[in-house]
Image (tube, rainbow, N blue to C red):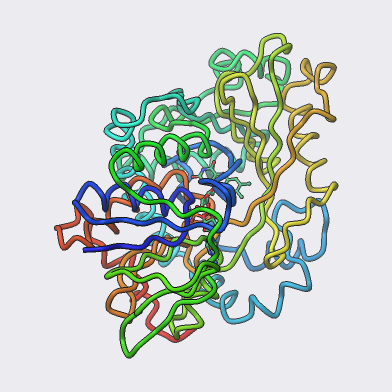
Length: 423
Ligand SMILES: Cc1cc2nc3c(=O)[nH]c(=O)nc-3n(C[C@H](O)[C@H](O)[C@H](O)COP(=O)(O)OP(=O)(O)OC[C@H]3O[C@@H](n4cnc5c(N)ncnc54)[C@H](O)[C@@H]3O)c2cc1C
């Protein structure tokens, strides 16, 4: 059986790897010159089952409305993106209803735990040379109310198998000494020891090398112009290099999966949500950070990756626009100096690598995997802010499904068919 995977980011590559493990003949196509050059390039670096809560939490609508047009808002909706969000946005808001939110949260946690468990055999296959670290994540709070709410949520997470420890400000500073200068501002912290971190781009390069050695074919620099439909099947793809055919097609093109699928009548409720990151060289810094930290008040995260610090955050509904907006990046520089005031004198803004990417966000905050109404078209997209966390698990589930093997998690709650209405 021949499978063609469209997209060489985290989700396409893990799917290709596991398909090959099942003995399929696999080709991955991507319009970029190498693996993981789009959203999987410079993400926050965290594999955090602890942060599996969908972004459409109860109250998200009023929050977004208050923030409309504000450049400093963590969640910014640009006016020009509004028309493309109308139908999708209604569903996004509808899924913030508490019972639905909780159900979707639980689905994400199960997939995240499954995915993190699969990272161990994957590391045995590709090594740990992707700045892998298993030091958990630390969430810090600067006020009592959000800290109390987060503890309640963490108790819920614990019932789903995600361990955590609640810490005082002093205990936070003891666990991450780089935070000692702001200890008095920290009300408390939550530590999630099972989380991991690593550089997604480097991971994808290693996985590509491994896949190649296993016999997967890669066609980089090849753009898929459209899928060709015949009846209830895909009969090929029209690419910048002509027609390509396979028995099964996996659409793992991130946010671009939506227009490609739409053109063959398959409505995929995924929209791009832009996020930014900075990568800073920490070589000269005294007492440099050594654990991933999420600052609840500032809605952003910092993650050590070897001798670098990745700072990521902000969410912007701006369509497919990939402009690097200085004010959004400045918010991230400010975060670093607020978190680590001792480091401010060493912070070289000029040498920082600035980046933005489009999170493929589904309308209910859960990734969309597996079959579609077209018999040989499969999806692996919509993982939004959790694509690195979910990549191994989602890739394995989709590959098992295509190969006709039993899946270790029930795939039905993650399939497109859960969205019964038309989009
Ligand atoms: C700022 C930021 C921080 C984040 N932090 C985290 C984090 O800490 N933890 C976490 O779990 N997740 C995080 N994420 C989310 C995660 O990075 C994404 O969910 C994940 O990278 C999506 O991977 P993907 O394979 O679906 O998409 P992509 O990586 O975008 O891959 C899709 C591929 O398809 C290719 N493609 C698209 N259209 C075509 C076409 N027509 N023809 C050929 N090829 C095509 C693209 O070139 C691309 O390589 C973050 C995201 C952002 C933006």
